[in-house]
Amino acid sequence: MTGETAFQVALSVIVWASLGVFIVGLVVGATLLPRSYRSALGILFLATISGFVFSFLTGFSIGRFTVFLPLVATAFAVTYARSWRLQVLVYAAAIVIYLTLAWVIIGISWGIPIELPLCCLAYVVAFLLPPPSGPMFD
Image 1 (cartoon, one colour):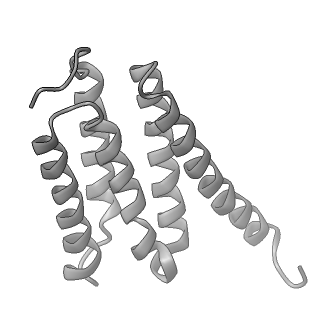
Image 2 (cartoon, rainbow, N blue to C red):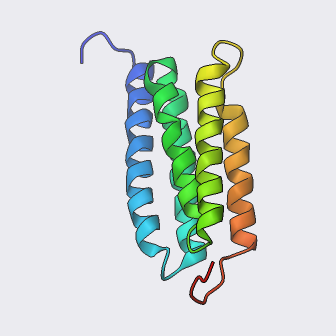
Image 3 (cartoon, one colour):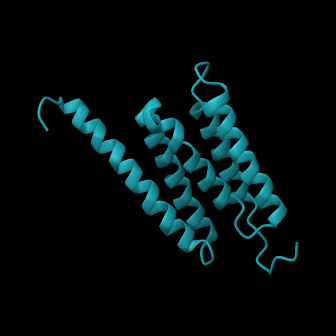
């Protein structure tokens, strides 16, 4: 690494660490969901935040593509063990939000300031209203 400033090196460490936290958090959180729902939801929330950090710091090079991952992770986390209709609706909403904010409104605004609060709200609602503990009939 020649010619890079300390700031550039620190920024690259933060970028790659946030991607690592996203991937590890997604795997660990998804593994824990059946046994410990609220703990897994907390881990998946941190993974989602890390995914948004990665997407924000990578900017318009690949950030526009990778911002889809935290949205899908949120949809997965908040609809776990819920009806298939709700799952389809939330995944469709994640896709529409991604397409609208990353591709339709190009140049007007950066979508993360809208997507991140929506994901946080979804996690709060899922935390306060956990899925029923019995089998799903719907």
